[in-house]
Length: 294
Image (cartoon, helix red, strand yellow):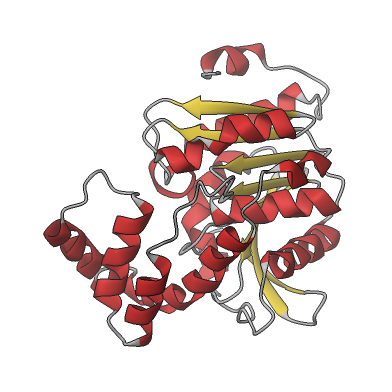
């Protein structure tokens, strides 16, 4: 029995448009929800989120390129490559609801430009509007990674992305060492080479945001109160650009709410968004009243 199956996952491999293999982990029963992980994340990091949705949905978490049994990024890699992969998974599973976290949220938005969806939910999507995403650290990170200085590269990443509540060099170095050599360190080391191309896409796609006006799906944009301003500041801008969008800043949450710190809360937000869209033909007023809104 595979490790995925032993933990309640069903594993499948979908063939993408360029004939590449894309691994998918699924669990639950009901209408499908596809989950697109963020940078430096694997499908299994969203296990608790999937469990929170699995009572009413079949959740399909994509193992993005450069991870697990999925194909490498390849020389022609871009957001559209990832969008192709998501579309292949949606076609295979019949799912019409999409959730993306961080860089996965950017991918989800670009899927929404190409496909009619029942609903789209993105948690702090990696969107840069007017230079809002500062990737000035990327050149140093890439050089350090190429030189085999992975701890230094991780410290550069953590400082540059401002995802921790402190910026002192010794603390960042110690956490980087733990991330790379502790539990899960091997996965982290294997994923680090995917970062330059992914962050490079965020920079390449910097714009005034108007391209996203073509997303027709009912869209929920989520962010955490404790997250850096460059991640949450674009949400109200996107909410005014997308024709059918709303945004919510969730109190007490940070960038890793969907995968680590508050997956149950994010699952509730997803369910509420779907209930509000009357996908199931009812409105759960108790659930709606219990959750924060803007």
